[in-house]
Image (cartoon, rainbow, N blue to C red; front, side):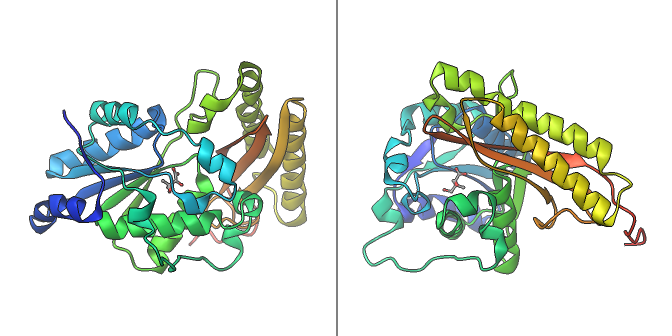
Length: 307
Ligand code: PAF
């Protein structure tokens, strides 16, 4: 199936006008291109959910300059539109929106989406100041441009997914944000457009992330259920220490962060926590990779089961 590529906001809006006026749903898969099987799974999911309702899937391909705090990282980001188009066709997309930076950020652009509070300051937000302001701003713009009913994002970027859901809720956006499972290589490495930059030895070393996370997941599921208060906090801290040690045990890895958080609140693990997010980020050479898993730990002693 042929996928149309639109570069301009006006031409995309015209192409979608009849879909919208007929009340047909639109699925949006926002990407920065360099598409891989992980993106393919988001596109296929959107196509599978929307086709039966006579809907369309739009894939945006835009390397968003304002979410890069490092200019070299922005310049090195792979741009592979021809290959992206083939993957979109195979996965069942209908339209690609691939605007220029000037189309999205014309001269004089000065309105941004900023989220106050701790949520943007931890994990990736701590290491990449301004990153989530850039992500939230561009996704908000894409939502206004495309007008999707649903938008699909990978669970690999757990903090991004959490913040986008919160933005949609806080700003009353009538869009369902759908999180999709991480797609992995056979050794468990999470698919990422950045993996292509890894030298062979770095690629081999990067397998330590999922091994460390899986160990942390088992340790959390073994050691946290049934604990409460200080005991639970101490055990969570000791699982985190082992997670750090497991990544640092790989000589080629430079740890950025390793954290255990409540997966629902993105706050600390408490007695009410039922699902723990274990999240890591580490550099392999110049390439920064992130990954996460969820541990199902039940709640500690204080939970009110009637809730
Ligand atoms: O996850 C990404 O690829 C980007 O952060 C996104 C959501 C497309 C915004 O530029």
